[in-house]
Length: 98
View 1 (cartoon, rainbow, N blue to C red):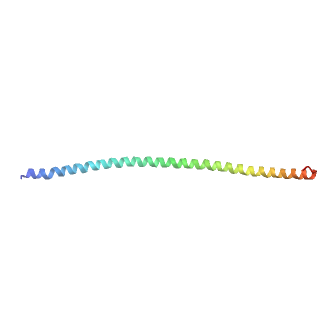
View 2 (tube, helix red, strand yellow):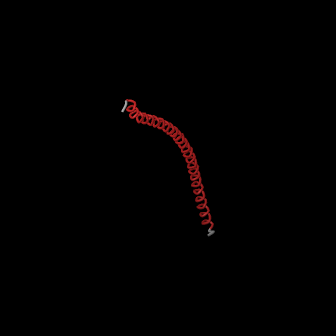
View 3 (tube, rainbow, N blue to C red):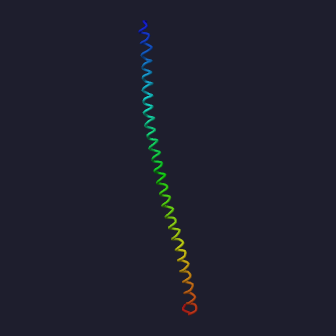
């Protein structure tokens, strides 16, 4: 076996392995770049969801406040109706209408 044959026997597989490693590194860097892009998109979506959640919370709080206001008004109205009913009942009792 000559020196050239020895070099080719050792060098060719070594060169193939080094080229394979280089290609793997290039592919991994490409994948990392794509994952970084996806991460940025997910962060953007998270920010948009947080904004949407804040707006929804604000609107629900406004609706709750309006319902609470209506509840107070209805309670006042019911109190007035009960008071009016009591007055009519007393007037009927005094006039002996029932």
